[in-house]
Length: 50
Image (cartoon, rainbow, N blue to C red; front, side, top):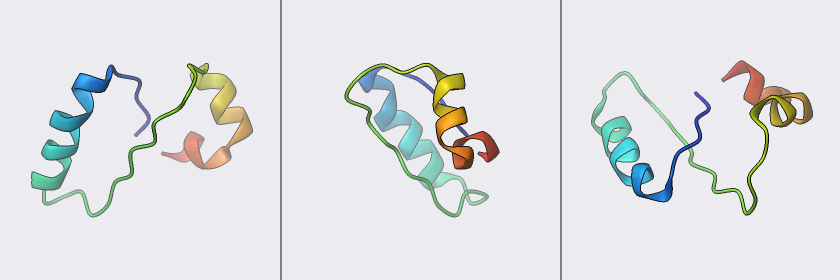
């Protein structure tokens, strides 16, 4: 799953993922600068599969 959200939304999303038994692992990455999602998927094929 790839998403863009304000900083305030990260904590509730992470909490929901920890509580969901269907989610085994997750990783949140904070980017220093805003990027285009399509451009990021082209640069990193792992994101395209998420």
